Length: 207
Image (cartoon, rainbow, N blue to C red; front, side, top):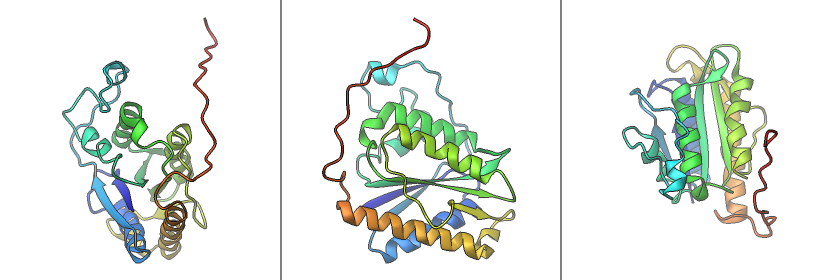
């Protein structure tokens, strides 16, 4: 079983990386493989709602000039997803949001139903808003959200300061243990007896 962890910070070895590394270490102790992918610090496109990924059945974004498709192509081989982001003005990193939106829309079939979790890292405030924002796409994709003993938050400003947040690190380890438990319960597969999904019935307010 394997968990993909996405470092949504432009800083490769910042506090988001520290929090994710704690999760990865605990997952390893639980016998669960993990991979941390850094989104980098180069420009990342936002979704332009062209719909070509769906119209052509590509299973990837039609634009292939950034890391989005490199990440989403891993969806098929993983059993769970954890996304971490720094807090910017009470919001997740915009580049990370662009990746999530494009990857889930273009390749959602390969991630739907798999467990997921989000992690927010901040200097002082705004983390709960980021945590909620990152969880919302998972709910739309029928992905069970894995919880911890607290909201998945770590605190720190300077690089590495999150390592001094003892409760935050404990929260990361608890999250990892809960993720490992769920994966072992389902053997990395969708839980048996999962409710059948109905065909989508879109309803718009303006016809």
